[in-house]
Image: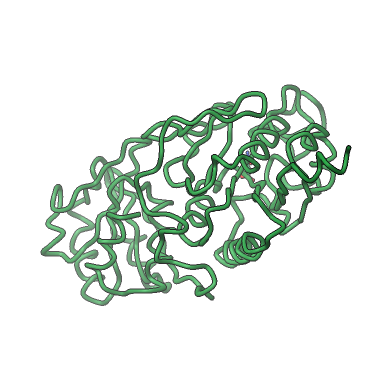
Length: 337
Ligand SMILES: NC(=O)C[C@H](N)C(=O)O
């Protein structure tokens, strides 16, 4: 009988990367003061025995780090392992446990480069497992529930935090400390409650199987950096980043990606020297940048990131620039993904 149920259950692999979901604090009162990336994947799985009711679960420790320290090489390593597993007949879904600080970047990266319709769910927690009211157990349970659900196929990379199912493209860490930390300007795609998912929306942008990018064809990512717009800003950071080898600069602009008159000449000059200039906005959850509004992008040969926040724009620019150095192509890609 037990063997029969095991056969019916989906096979889900949990790839662990670290973060607070694998964190540990000195006391149960430490919800914010703790060390991330301490607990191994087998212990995480053993901590939620109810996972066995949802799926045949096994774990792999891909890395053990706090997500603010994730590098491009780490992204490639994780992406390649996800692709290998997705190709395996024995794998129905993949869950990635991850720190929340750059979770939105990794989720968007995988959404662009994984050529599979199998569910890929990225999950983290805001409190370590040692804290009172730790959120990691339920978030992980929800992630496995969504990853083992056939309805999750073909919907792009998903994120399960705080009972919501979010699109990995849209979702962003909008609040810290609180467990209700992840938001999307366009709303969640669904809810997951007691191991069952309820869907309400589909993503409109290209992803996974419909993406022109493939992790198997990517061996390195170009350097793309971000500089922040604010009152009294100078062009120092932009110039320094370019001098240090940035192939594209994301302008984390004020408002709708506006650029200070003290910075414009340097960005025009950098573009002439081959650096791509991509205007984004640091307006939280509502940054929306249109071409030729605020700045003459056609004349300057700049690109706009539209609704992508600066950190997501960095991911798309890196992936796109593995294929093209043409600013018009880049702009097309920014509209489509
Ligand atoms: N809540 C967290 O996971 C934060 C942690 N610094 C990380 O991103 O790894």
